[in-house]
Image (spheres, rainbow, N blue to C red):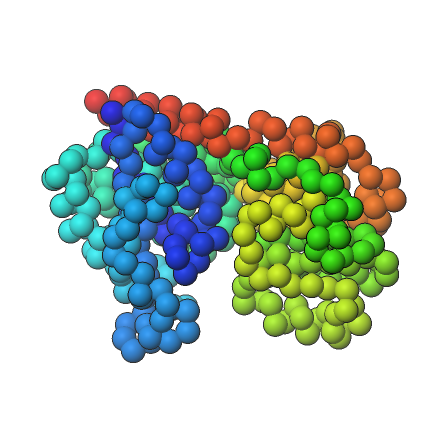
Length: 390
């Protein structure tokens, strides 16, 4: 039996059911293995009182300290958060807050390995827990944790230190692995661990029927992702001025929402741009099946789940040449890699609308990305670390 402590600040909860949903899927499939006993610790950062009673923190502070999520025991210990100014302090504050709980659980039933699901702040915290418990630890790199947190002057040194100390590392794409090596991490430690997709949910539906259900007519462009500057949804909105017959749906929520709405209004395309906010995966799959194109001109990615989900629905991609986009698409006609410019984006979208690629070809690109395969690779990786330590 492999006893796994999964450490993840990205994990779904009742307030944010879509928060880290990909980590939730991965963890659930690993926990379903009969040879795995898995516990999740998902620390919740809250500012000091009375700030924790306002805004989004008010709902988060009501979450239970312990619950079973999809049959998995999940602990949600609190730690003090210093927004904006205290990023470099976060790992130390988190480790200090959760250490008593981790040591108690380890005494009751010893863990074999720590599986950190994001490099920041999970990685440095996993390093401290590993030192305290005397067990191996692994860190998974997903994209922004390397490209953003790994390159900041205040957090980058801790990202690199934890990567060097880790017994094993995971990367969601070969491109991200190369970026980790550039930071100074050891190539031999890094194993590719592609994401998974729920192929029962994300599959092609009849496009006309999906459009009718959603009340959409004409060509539809979908973009999926948190509404944050790194995703650059603003470029797709600007591209709409070159696509007068198309509609755009932005799926997701985030701090950029109001600015993006103002942008759409200012350039006269607001009547053709729809914001859904956070929606379920079933709803996302319907929008993707209705869309002629999924466009996401991100500044950086590891290997975006949204790319694979779109392809699984038979929907081609227009994306920037970042992260694992090139290794995902290969020489397929089910996607275009474009410059991060509205005119180039619009040209690629128009080509997809006018000459649609075969939906089956797009779907086939997603076929290898199963959660079962994801789970098997993760299990082998963690078991190998334990055996090597023994």
